[in-house]
Image (cartoon, rainbow, N blue to C red; front, side, top):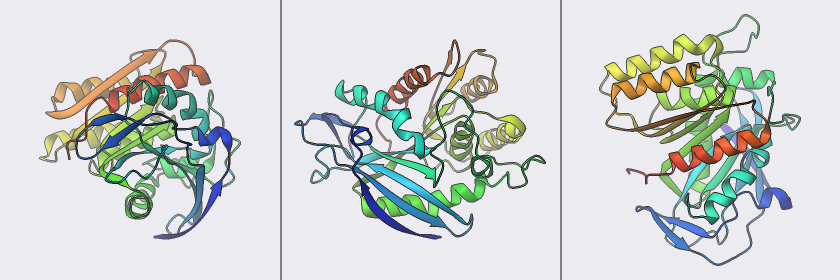
Length: 291
């Protein structure tokens, strides 16, 4: 559980995060040309988690013209919300303008005071280790609380966003980079109903590798349905853990799950990451929600 407070951030750069000309109407996957209306400013919400004893910041970017009567908007939950502008400004806007993805609400989820994080390198913050890793680590005594963080999202953040905005409640995506990519994958596999779409960028599995593969194997052996879209991006060798996991899942032939992956040559510079995110967003939004 938690409590929250909200403020409007009049940041010009952040305000164009999902500027576009398209709208998405539930329940069908319908693109519709909209006029060039101003994009609402980013809303910054501070939300306290009792279980994690942590203040989080939610950066909510609404699409232009919001709210259109009768329109329900898919929501993309972006981990490391304090760098969500760097992650998505250059990736999302052109896709919406070209009608390659629906008009979406972006909810960046970040730690208060974590603005020093940057793309293109290791995003190190012990709070990320705590929240994004599902197994313990002797180096970091707080590691392994991904289940608690996922429960916080599922039971507190998502219901708050759904109650506050015109969301498509059966069309939620989660995206993350590095440890955030690990958590995105973990969240989709450990509780498939929370997020229908998953974008995992350069996931750092580390000590959680065996655990994630076990979750997937247990899921495959059960009758639990797994649907939606999952997309993995790695930088460099295609024999990475993420690619092996994607190949393993493809071999299961989940009937309602689309799986994509790409190995990008070179390092994880900001421009390369943004290009990979664009490809991933095209993939995970290539099909309408099944609900």
